Image (cartoon, rainbow, N blue to C red; front, side, top):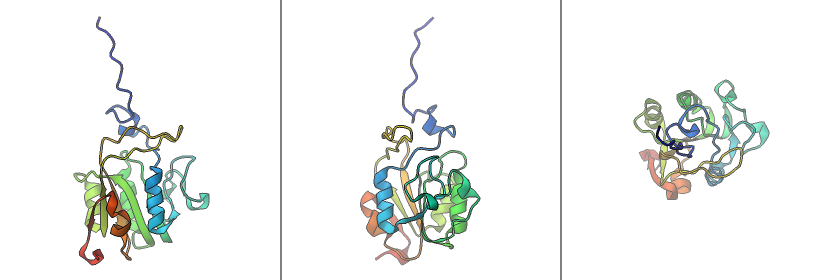
Length: 181
């Protein structure tokens, strides 16, 4: 028989946990959360990773409760949804609540070829296509992962503007005409 070749040891390998719906609780990089706080302060996180959140516990709905409970708040809702098969449920939820929140910022894979991304882009006042590949955080060790194998985007829903001012240095920001300075 031939020698055994070990599996590539990266979470981003096609059969690794980050590329499947088997594991979807990678944490948002801290610098992204800090930038979102600078934009408006996070009032609600409807889908924090199990046992971990970036905001006060009373403002986190817990794993998957954000698909059932209201996101209505005058403040900013930050959504880094699970990137598995259910991502469209989260993006549809954001579209449903966009008029009932002060602002919504979603961190999503920039999968421009997907139906859910096209639906977001058609309605969003602004999108930041982040330069490079994000390194998410492992919830068990709080260490960075290898760079993700996909680009990421921050998608914004709101009415006041200023998104490009806060996120413009992270990558290309596309804004609807009414939000350009």
